[in-house]
Image 1 (cartoon, one colour):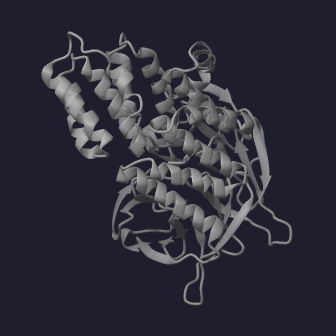
Image 2 (cartoon, helix red, strand yellow; image 1 turned 180 degrees about the vertical axis):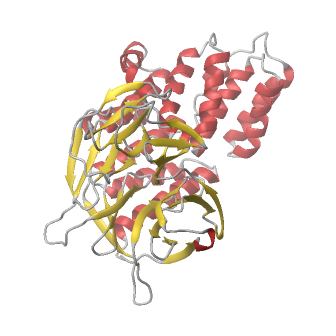
Image 3 (spheres, helix red, strand yellow; image 1 turned 60 degrees about the vertical axis):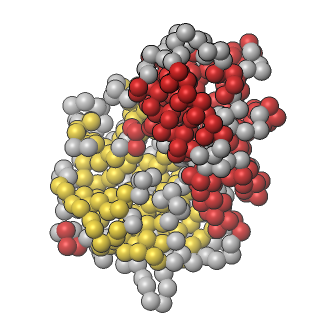
Length: 490
């Protein structure tokens, strides 16, 4: 949710204009299923509605209700944050029902959902066509959705006045549905960038109140709890809630960790092995071998996990990049970024090399000084963080990989912050694990220091912290290399 490219909503307000007249292709059974699914959606019974809507393209793929049902499915999944399912459904609409009377809206919706899956390339490349829809039919649903795409791009480009204008235009026109909730979520992101957390909370509160779906309401509640903890709660201590131990797996000490949106905690070990836990089961780790010299974990396409090992990159036991397939001479880290590109960070060249989804080269990014220990972290509201360990500098590279904004972690009258590792949450906050004081320091999306959390107490000390992760619930994970354990804090 409030992840810049991951937000929620269901477009119920547009049901009437999409259903239209009953055509010769309608069948009594498919028509009945669509009517039942639509009714259940209006009643807030989303799980029951899903069963009816899924059956239509499965049992009646040639009926005129099939593309309508798939569109509903795409919007429901988008509403619930299930972006892969949303993309699968809308892809079917665009490819199998290209001649549909609402093809323009389906195409725009496809571009929009792609942004939530972390790929904004289509929206960037088709910016002119998207803006033309607004000019041509300013009151249409396609135009409203086009404005939502333009607002997201404006936030990513940090063009906040333009983003606010576009979001205001959307919220004036509609008061319910997927575009409404997405606009509210983007408005909350905008308010955080403007250092106005109170208004951000009000926007998320409206999201929660606008839906009867418990999945949506629970996601909004988690974000409200996190904002309250970061901005309003005076408590600065993190509570240790679980220990993930893995010495029994033959560990030689962790080198990196990652926690997924689905609750999977992955530990990369010097052994070299990879140990996987479900966050609800700290005592049930499963280990497997990984390539020699494995040193980093990061996000790949479709949130698959990348393992950076020497000068190669492996995902799901498949080598994606090797020395023969890329020009990188000294690979430091790699990530799948929001523009729909792989970035491979090269210490020797003092830059990152860009590749598209099919791993075709797109050339290098801008130059900056590297020390060989940098980490790449995706920023959920646009861009990618680059952190330099043993330094007080962090860079934010824009979504197109063309501009670097340099930021200093040092705040006057405070001790110097030296990052061991960084992570980001779904709201765009940057979490820094500090080498000197063993603190977790949190910065706002506008890069203002807002909170420092203490993780140590008289009964508990970190020995050798090495890596940091934050899960969708806001829980913080710290890996201790000497003790061979991952600590969970809340």
